[in-house]
Amino acid sequence: MSDEQPKKKPGFQFNIIKNDPLDGHRGQNFGSISLENIAPVYINIETQEAKLDIGGLHGKAEVEKRVKWIKDKEEAMGPDAKEYFLVWIAVERAAAGPIYNGVAACYLMVNKEKRRGYKMMHEHVNSLDAAMKGRIKLDVLDERSKETLKQFMMNHNEDMWNISQEMQEAFNK
Image (cartoon, rainbow, N blue to C red; front, top):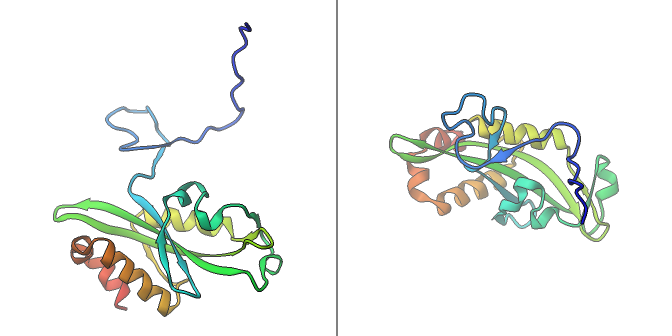
């Protein structure tokens, strides 16, 4: 038997936790992020199929599996390439009940045959951040995809959609 302890990874450790990161403790878990109220929805641009895949929180959605991410879009292109919008949807509790609070979209392309995927990571991080902060950023979406997302949100929870006035206004612009 060895008394050796497993070595910790050097450098900054990023904590993603459930519930309130501070929960009454000053300094405890400061700088932690709760992803409990955020969900990734993938919209296939060609078929307009919208799918919630919680694995997307950690880059492990079915759409994103088994591909190497590259910055050159040309390398991922081909007859088998599929284009998607990744939409981050944030939910918050309001006086009237839970509401859709923030939504932000970004683009990605996946070619499973070539095992290559294209996405600009900073756009995905910024979109997640915007949704978590309650912002509504739909400028990347085309009209068909915007309508698909609207229908998805309404079908997911109609009551939540009905009391999310700011979200309804954004989709009706």
